[in-house]
Image (cartoon, rainbow, N blue to C red; front, side, top):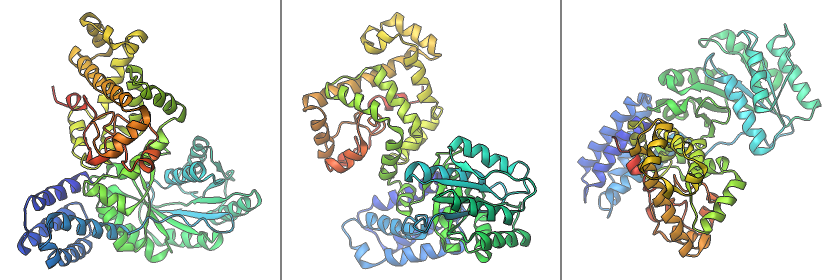
Length: 495
């Protein structure tokens, strides 16, 4: 997400930070590069122009030019302006009404409206304990109603029974009545779309809205369509009283023009971002955190939330007990790798850790997330005894493991070296007094690159407690630590 824009802006700001003092010419030159970067990211021209003018005006002030760290001051100004452009504060769904709260989903055909409906319904049911009913009003697209029913089964969310021949307004009326009678907290209406905006579509949306009286009308747009997405949003906002926007396929949007332009053009907040095809691949859109990712500052809060979802409490408690004893075998390493995969893989996590945005490029160079699969295959090819006691792996056994996993002995050695360094880290933790000492160590800012390198260290620790407890943050992040876990550097090097 935003990779190309982040790389361009990162280069501009690295040059600014590298200078001890800045002149007005330096700042204006950098802002011209920022403007080009925004336009290349498909940001709307008026939005890019206004953004750069605002930032330039603030950045050429005497307080910045005479600052001890002028380069950092400029970055801070850009960060604040980006956050404001994206919407300043995260916008929540309006659910504090007499049940049922009605959410109407609108958008063009193919934008991901039906899937987004199911994703939001699952999120409300799972995270907020809401009783949700979904209803499809799309009678034009073949099997649209059946598709929502299937997604409802997968998400374990109820869907309105299909009645053949009913028109959208009648379905909406029946859905509202059913939601009220059956005590649902939220009703989600998945409306029909078209291949392009036309008056018939807008008339249908208004007719449904008049009957359902929705509390939220969310426009679903495909972020990969860039300026077209912005134009669609503008057309809808002029004719339908939108309350928010859902951007789909954000995980594949390296430019980010749609996200950066949407709020400025429509005046409506982006409420959710679709980050993949799975039903749980939906994130609340937080402008501050998104601005942090764009500028390479990471998204630690998002990382904690993702970790909290991925970590199994029982497994975490077992891991914590072993860590307190200084134990860490290859089964434990495999559990760590599995958790990383559930959290989105190395590349996804790297983009959320301050200072590690470039690590994603390293991962891509060696085959992307396949590196985790390869490492898991190596460990799986070992016997249970070898996983418990890696020192048993002599040359002959390593050859067997390499052949069994379709890798090389060099790969096996790299994995074993990584494990050894992480095991040593566990022994140091034990010497420092177990988990209490570990919290002190991470909070105190020393940090080992350790399991400790945020990516390797998610498994045995409750990240939320680490953030709230010792003032230090996630393992490996205390005191500015942003290293990959021991051994990962070698694993990610090209052969």
